[in-house]
Image 1: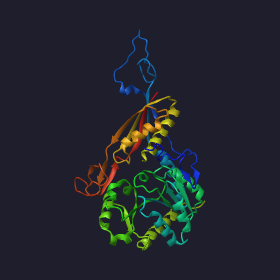
Image 2 (image 1 turned 30 degrees about the vertical axis):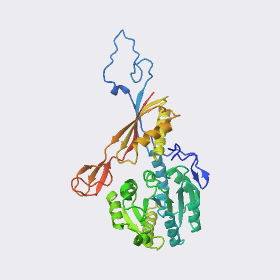
Image 3 (image 1 turned 120 degrees about the vertical axis):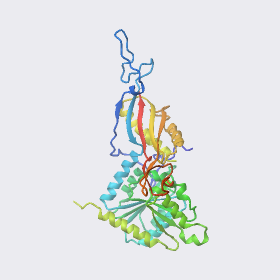
Length: 292
Length: 113
């Protein structure tokens, strides 16, 4: 097993530059100290003629042992990531930006669908793209060729994007107010489910060349997503894939998931997908606090 | 393999606390991990040992307290135990189950000296 997997710092590159040292997110730590006596039930009432070696803070009395105590923390393990995600989300909402986190297994057609989406929007909607991959700048280059600003994050050995990477990428992308931000996560149906980036929605792309039972095999991701794009639908006539069963399986893990069937090749479903995006952008702008 | 990131977040919380508390060593770490949290416990143990090697929590004991998955069936309004995301309600068979517990992932307490 790789001992640097997911650690980010040192391996992660944003547009070819190293990830900067993280700043302190605005997360409060709550803890309270407690004596260990709760696990130490019998009483130690010192007699007058007793030299008490156990009068330390925690009442430890074994010779040679130092003063152990229990510190209560009750802190969420992902609190640091969530703190950065909240910062991103606040920025998005203050600037009317509609951010989507696109997740899928590798090879589902995320980048192709993005390229088609950008071409279909044809400059009518200001947008930017953040591309996440372990290595190479290939996807960002494809997006730029399609006419949209794109920044590549290379996660090195990391298996997902986190909110700090997105925060730093946002600073370099010069995001326009009232724009659309498409974040293409690392192709992985497991880890990105746990890491909030501050997006409005996770969108899971599920291609018909995969198995119908993928939502059951990777339920966390399908549960975390609000929209499922069933992609490569132009191939359905050539496959045994049961699209109805695939949707049923997705709804079994997430009864509220919306589904759009799409094909980047034939253009099927693209209009519906663009309408969905337009509605989200409209709501993001409408919810923007008035300029002071 | 996001368990490595999670183990690093745990270590960060431990180090922050150790600094604030002025302690020299962390002996035991208690985590609360929900049954439905996206974490593989054994992988987390492996990663915890790896990331704490040269830290204040070197050789610390890792205690994982598992929190059972709980949900509420939207159809029949009963409370159900949830062990997997796609299980139907044992009472009415509905799949409309809202998870109400078992997704948490917390550092609960530390034994320090």
